[in-house]
Amino acid sequence: MSRRDDVSHYYDPSQLIDKIATFLFYANVVLACISIGLSGQVKHYAIVGQVLIAISYVLLTTVDDFFFWYTAESFRRKNAIESAYAIDLSGLVTDGYYNNTLAPSTTKYALNAFESVFFSKSIAKSMNVAELMKSVFAIVAFLLSCMEIKNGEIVLLVAQTVFSSTFILGSIGLLVYQMRLSSLYDDFYHDFVTVGISKNEQIRLLLADTVEYEAVKAHYKVRLSSKKFTAMNTELSRKWTEILNKVRIEECTK
Image 1: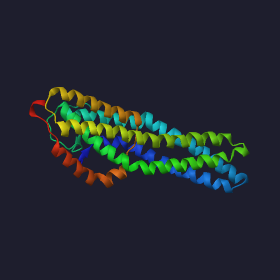
Image 2: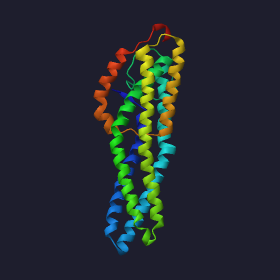
Image 3: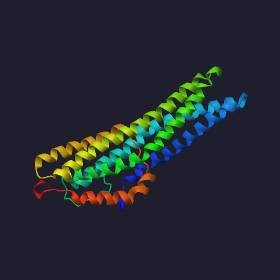
Image 4: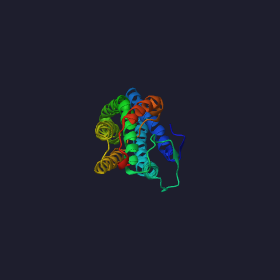
């Protein structure tokens, strides 16, 4: 377990936005459901509320993607290089974030990425059902909004279309993200465990897989659940230790 992680506080704004976005999501679904049974001015307010919520949700998550999340991930990428090569790029310190004792090297960089892939793919897999249910709720809100077309609420339909699309794409993105990481995990496992690292030429392949991992993270922008991590960390750490004990690295390649 990490004893110190100076990078983690850069994720705090994203976590706050995620909590607000979750509240907005459920508020939107509830308003969509109850507005069907409303009429008159109250119904109008409920519809306006849905539009404002949908727009606010999209704006908040977009700002997070472009600024807060990018900044946090940028520091995490730099710290991965700092941890692997024992250099100082940011002045931020992590102690115990990665669990191996290799000397500073490209092999250490790749082994750290292997660990991150293992944890990330496992947590992402555990999130699939919850994200799928969110997509279902978002579709329900969209279908209920379609019923308001007869009242001329085109703005509501457009807002709900964008809102529901965000969750559907997010659910699909999470699944593809998990698949990409599973493939990378197999590649890392093959190189580190099945075959073992005995030639310097193999390190180039490890570096390619490490860069691909960073590209996958940057592209899909998946927010892994901190609650899932806390719940699964002990078991995943145990499994990772078992994998780490099977890693084979010749001294000449380190």
